[in-house]
Length: 68
Image (tube, one colour):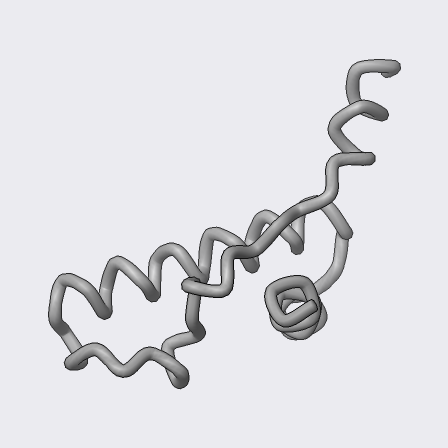
């Protein structure tokens, strides 16, 4: 149980380079666009798991963490 507490206190840092699919200026269906989309989804899922919230709340937190 004590080890879980260590992981719960880890703060997620989101690089400014990670963009949402709507922000990404790469050509749709290009490898760069798909890679960015996957990375964005992974960050949102990580926030979702850590915070125990839904996708939309995690996405909101993603932008707050990235833009601070």
